[in-house]
Amino acid sequence: MLKSFQDYYPDYFSYCYGCGHLNDHGLHIKSYWDGDEAVCTFYPQPYHIAIPGYVYGGLIASIIDCHCIGTAAAASYQAQGREMDTEPPLRFLTASLHVDYLRPAPLGVPLKVRARAREIKGRKVVVEAALSAEGEVCARGEVVAVQVPEHLVSKQ
Amino acid sequence: MLKSFQDYYPDYFSYCYGCGHLNDHGLHIKSYWDGDEAVCTFYPQPYHIAIPGYVYGGLIASIIDCHCIGTAAAASYQAQGREMDTEPPLRFLTASLHVDYLRPAPLGVPLKVRARAREIKGRKVVVEAALSAEGEVCARGEVVAVQVPEHLVSKQ
Image (cartoon, rainbow over all chains, first blue to last red; front, side, top):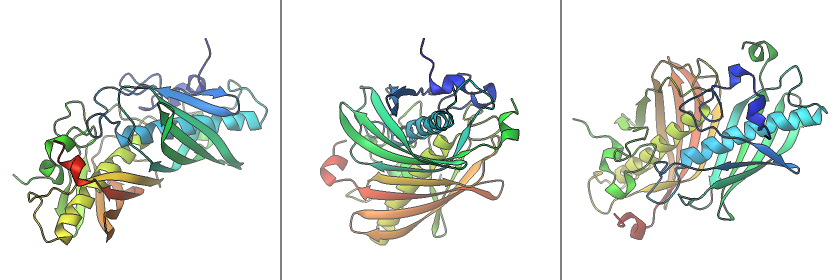
């Protein structure tokens, strides 16, 4: 089975409420390459409401955040010509998150996020994302991701 | 008992996953005046993890979002010299959300958010917020809130 970016995270980074497979209460956001873009498909729960019928904006921010952080890691491995299961692991945290909400996202359909690393510079990666429902872009996001110092990554 | 800003929302706006009292699965974020600032105290759950010991960034974004939207409403009533329980109700949605993560917020302590409407112009309110844990600012946020058209507000 195709592994998601998040499946490569060391255990220490796998408790994230947004995307950690070791978090029993979490959202389990998963990201994959699709050509030169990273894609994530997410199915909100019926209670992830903003106003009735529409998806909660904080959930949209969370999906964009975790998907972009995963994309930052995957793009960094790629830029170094490395597979994601090679050492040392490259892990990122969010320095800033920006979301523009363009139109309400309907509840009850899958959300699709497409992201791309716009800039990789030293320990910083800028990732931009568009979140769509039923083919229409509902939100655009930008995440500035910063690589976690190695002494923290090895703290598994 | 002192009513929070969110306690004044019409039912139609009270299903929000972040702050709606009618959402059984939600976060139940609540906001109050403290002088000329709006404050919110939030207790993350043990599973709201980013990396072990620290609070998930998407939750921080969600708290800032709902608290700033509540602050936009409360500040708008205040600017019009009106109480929050007067008609017509003023309700806001998020046009954009920006969060700068300055330092990891520790899990296990309450988070405090202080917000202030920086600009009220027509149907738009810009709100800025600082989120602290144990007296240290961990994140700063800015929300551009836009007033919901009246035909939507009355759709309760």
